[in-house]
Image: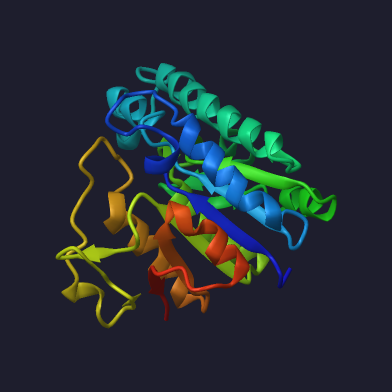
Length: 251
């Protein structure tokens, strides 16, 4: 599926990360308006982060530490939080004219010791063939070693990109790219990543913040697939193939 494009919408731009459980409807609407003109021009998958809808719940129930009967109630609570956000994202995409449909990782993904081993690839292929835009998100999924775990959107994107042969991968964030000393780092690879201060997340993020994102994208680069990190208001530029002013992560 050589024309396939995968876009990740960061949790920091679809929620208000400083306010637990608050969806940023205004930003989601603006994102949908940028993406809509490109719907139907090429196969498209959208993945979004959980932001403040899911991270606090997962932390409260210690989902990252593994799930047993003692904290299994956290599966429902966490999945409900991220599903509520997903409904808002999909509703905005559909209002903008896109044939977007939710695909919850809880129901289609499986992990082993925190890493994806399946992610509904067959279902996604059938959806894309019908012109549907699958919309996945960070979620709690069942895990053959831990009971359950959190799978971030940053892990879902590279997995699908490799399995489906994506041509382009874009990551929209609340900043213009990877920043160091206030300046955008134009390129990251295995050789220079150790020299860059990737910092951390200022709000609750149990998936590793920017450092976790870069680690996943470097694994994708190892497979020969470049990815691009840019500001939320440059999504349209990326989809159009124009300069997006961000960071390229490459082999």
